[in-house]
Image (cartoon, rainbow, N blue to C red):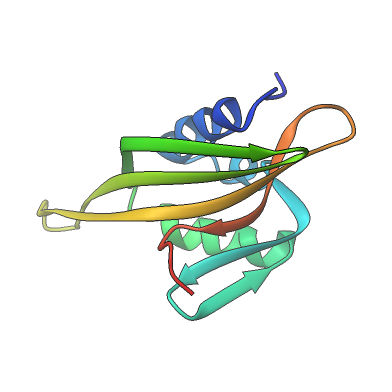
Length: 124
């Protein structure tokens, strides 16, 4: 089901992320979207985002949202998400990372919302 708000779209993102659903995640991006894979490194386009998501999900991370703020202007929305990600290494050791994302969503002609900029680090 297509998300009718940026909030619904992010909820789909989190569900697919935690399920390890690479193709489901890629479907939430515009074809020419930009993804910040680490501060200062940006990839663009469906193929590059798919590769980045495969690499990211290889460790079976679990995403939790601590807080979320959404700002909408017309057909564009900014989501600011405070997140925590836990991963379990091959040795069974659990590690945790936390941050704040700044993501830009755009409403599509069919009314659904897709990511156009995914900046999980909230920095340039």
